[in-house]
Length: 78
Image 1 (cartoon, rainbow, N blue to C red):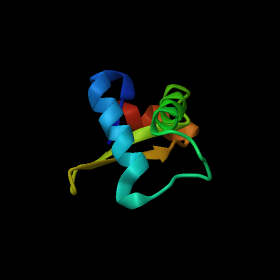
Image 2 (image 1 turned 90 degrees about the vertical axis):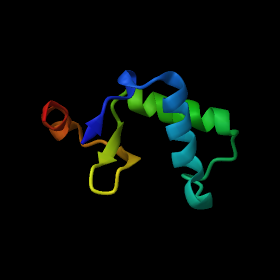
Image 3 (image 1 turned 180 degrees about the horizontal axis):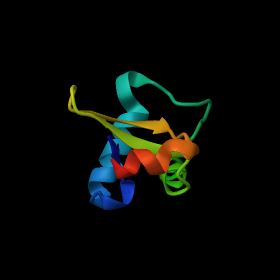
């Protein structure tokens, strides 16, 4: 299920993005930048619909994934 980023409380969105960026010590990309700048970058990707927040009902977890623009509209409507 796709969760619209603009329907989340700003603090919740920031926490979700921070958890995604720092998950298991992973570094997403080859960036030597601050956490704040990485959060801003992910927000820009969400706003541009180049990434989406995906909720897994079975695991009750969220993650951020690259969107597939062609099928995004259909997935949001279900």
